[in-house]
Length: 77
Image (cartoon, rainbow, N blue to C red; front, side):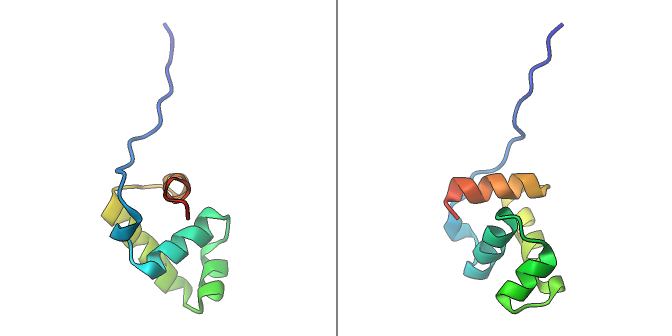
């Protein structure tokens, strides 16, 4: 028996599906910033950054930070 690893399916959506501030938050998270660091860089509260990232996940049907990072790379953010 052999096991095959496959990447989870991520709905490919154009960057235009995301608001500019959602794209910015995604870019910071994908570059390795924490929610708090992202909030400070964007001049927002940590809760607002969390809300942006929840909206991104809902819009694009993704569940993990790894999937968000992969998406950011594929979008060139």
